[in-house]
Image 1 (cartoon, chains in turn red, cyan):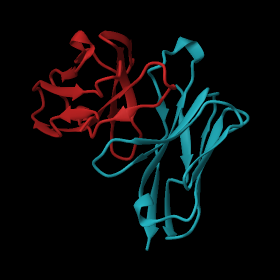
Image 2 (spheres, each protein chain N blue to C red):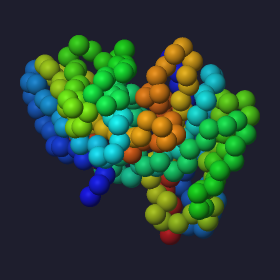
Image 3 (cartoon, each protein chain N blue to C red):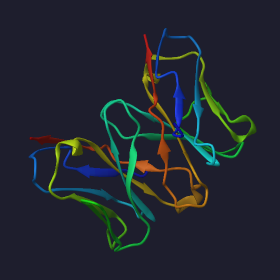
Length: 115
Length: 115
């Protein structure tokens, strides 16, 4: 399977705990994105990387959220001190930098439930 | 911030019928895209539009980039049961120096097809 892979698919945690999600993009893609989706809404941009550089971060992203993409390959998204409002589907996507704006390939997401 | 308004919010149709949905914005977008999302999966790109007035087809799907650059529509002809899902419009605007990573998504149109 050469698609975008996300792990875990589901995560249940208690409020106040830290969680970390992993994303493995399509290997040839140099851009990687994180989006968040709540029930009944479209995906909402969080951050994106070109290679290992984090080029933009949403103002909606609090300091409790951090993303990394060491060596420009896989990426991790960490949420510290989780809150119930963090419950959502976290989607990772990847793309080529020069093959059409917006042509993102999404993974199946990580569903986070904060109790 | 930028918002995309999709209509209708949901549609219930019979197999074989044609479907039309649209997306509007109060601000200009330079790129319009249409994605489809199945339950438990990430969105999948259907059509990308890069030029005002552009009309593009992908099989039974046809989408247009509005002349004003503030709207787009998607048509599905001769619907089949596997067309069931949530359809999202998405736009990119480079206003304000936004980097190329950030797409704005609509809230989605839920399509149900009765056999």
